[in-house]
Length: 394
Ligand SMILES: C[S@@+](CC[C@H](N)C(=O)[O-])C[C@H]1O[C@@H](n2cnc3c(N)ncnc32)[C@H](O)[C@@H]1O
Image (tube, rainbow, N blue to C red; front, side, top):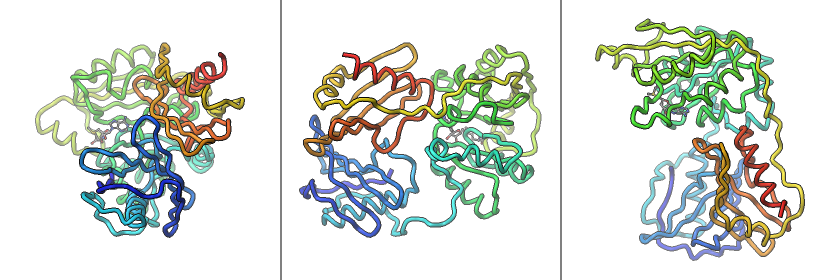
């Protein structure tokens, strides 16, 4: 993550200013810590930088709740902020002098999937739509996309370098049927419409043999796969890990139609696969074929707050810190005050294994999610409903 360490930050907290296309809004100052949030807008994007004091100086970096943006936009924003305030930089990992990229990119922000009708648009254009989870070097997705131009492939990755690498290849090879999403595949899958996908590929997922609960394939993932796959759509797992194979088999076997193959070659072999084959390891292929047309819709859920609420009531709830429920939770963090009328509250919510971080903005008694609403997963919806209860029921 781009960041700078500066000597001291004695700049005027209340001043809004602009540098080029970057607009820096008022700082929100934490009442409990010395942290400050700096809200920045650039064209249609809004994001948050956080300023944190430590024993060496003051760190300025991207706040984690911010949506995924091209990294150069963030780097330039930090540089503009520092140069406007003439901050003395002690350390910086921002080397590039490049202006924000305007080059065509196939990377799509996760929230565009929720907010625009992108799922519908893709469906109108392509006969089939498939997802590859954790595409790594991208060899497999590039191969299937070039051999099946009628299918749109959505590649989901959490590793930034892999995302850049695939994005470059897509541009160089002028491939039109790959969309890249930088997020946890489980989050994306949870907002894919019902009966939408032809195939889900999970090739050589991280085995997590010491922490099996962290595996991408778990019962929730299988449930979401069944929901999002079309009838006869397939969830394809390819792994070198016997443990992963055994644990996934138990999950796959809950459904009627699964098959397993050992050591088969497919058209394209990934970097990992080459390595495992050289070591003489077994390669397990498992496919789950969806027999259902399951309907369970959670799209379109609007995360709104109903009534006017005052600062004290919100603070009273927040004092409790954590609310735990069977499969989800709400946990409150730092409060930032912008002025007497306006405050920002840090909130973590949703599923225990995929928590969502958001901010709540309270302005003149009106509460809303700041920057971006939570993704409409089942757990986030339940957490929001419980948030309404704890805020308004007493
Ligand atoms: C062992 S590599 C395999 C890469 C590629 N599929 C291959 O066969 O070479 C696993 C990949 O999954 C990605 N990954 C891990 N967890 C993920 C998640 N929850 N969502 C999306 N990608 C994930 C990792 O960043 C990594 O690139």
